[in-house]
Length: 213
Ligand code: PRP
Image (cartoon, rainbow, N blue to C red):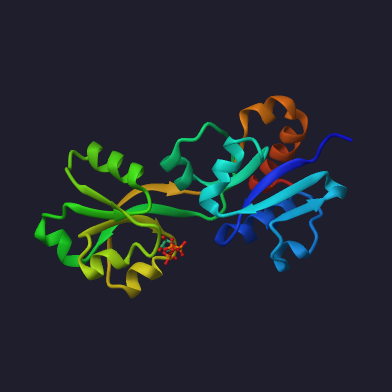
C-alpha cells in the first residue's frame, strides 16, 4: 500500500464542519476524532493520517510538506500567500472579512488606526482605497481595540455578527467573502496525484450536493 496521505486539519470552529464533510465523502473516521485531544490521528483503514493544528498554522505544515494536504480558511491564505495549491472551495465556515468600528468613527471621518489579525490584507485593502492608515497587529479579540481606544477601526472576520453587536460596533465595509479551502503541497500533488485527486473529487461531489458512489 502507498504511504498514508497526511492531512492537516484546523482545530476549533472549522474542525467539526471539515470532519462532517470528510464523512459525507465516504471516509470512515473514528469517533475519537472529536473526542480525543490527540494531535496525530491515524486512520489505517482509509490510509489517512491527520494532524490537528491551529487554523493559522495549517498552511505552514502544508507548505513545508509535513502534511500533503490541509483545510485552511481563505482568510489565512490571503494573509500569508503561501507556496501551496488551493484545489477546492469546500464552501464551509462561510464568513466575511470586513471593516468595523464604533458608530461615531464613521461620522468623525478621521479613523487612521486599524487593529487586525490580518495586517497584509488590511494594508492592501486601504492602499487600494487610497486611504492612509496605521495598521496595529493583534492576535485575537480584535473587537476590543476600538472599545479601549487602541484603534478607531478593525479589520476582522464577521460570521454571525454577534461579537460586533454585543460590543456596540458596526460593520462599514465588506472586504471579501471567506470559506475554507482544500490546499495541497505542490510536491505531494505531483507524487501523490491519484490519492489527492480522489480526495478532491469525493469532496467536490459533497460540496456540489451530488451523491458519493
Ligand atoms: C472570530 C472573529 C470575530 C468573531 C466573529 O474570532 O475574529 O471575533 O469570531 O464571529 P461572530 O460574527 O459570529 O460573532 P474567534 O472566535 O475565532 O477568536 P479570536 O477573536 O480570538 O480570533
